[in-house]
Image (tube, rainbow, N blue to C red; front, side, top):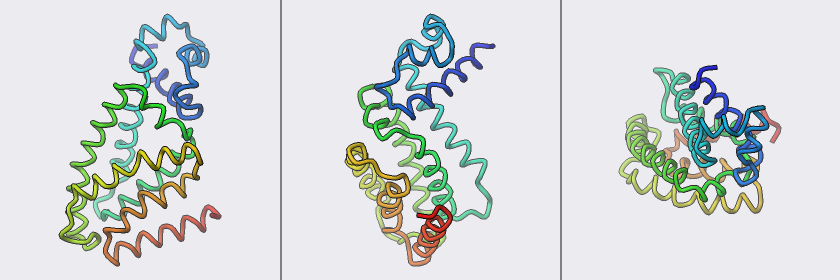
Length: 206
């Protein structure tokens, strides 16, 4: 197996372990055992656990963006994109340990990577907001920088709460992402969001 393919195989296996068990519980020994690989080979591919965790987070972020790009359609509105993102994240979050995000804060390189992702998202969100205004789905004359900042500032506290009192993914998204977007949506936008919630509850018996 070529080194790049081997690295991808290691990342895929480690991702599942980190997501299922949390970061703290997963050691390099456990990763090597799961792969039936020697620790020496594993350390030749990744310097340490933090290096491997960075690769896992980066791969997950790329995978998400790739899937959203492939699923996009020319006729999509901003609400279509938001709801598709909700659906993907709800499915993804079902396999994530409540401790995963809080435990990544112990790894400076991972924290830096998340900060870079947030900066990219800030730029994207500002463009996204203006597009939503043009489509008649977002309220005009709001400050997208502050809208994004208020959301990002809220998330650490919400994640800390959900670590102590785990929330179902649907409840987590409904009370954070969904409420936030609904707050700056027009009546037309809110109707589309509310329809999604009603249909999701019905389909998943919630």
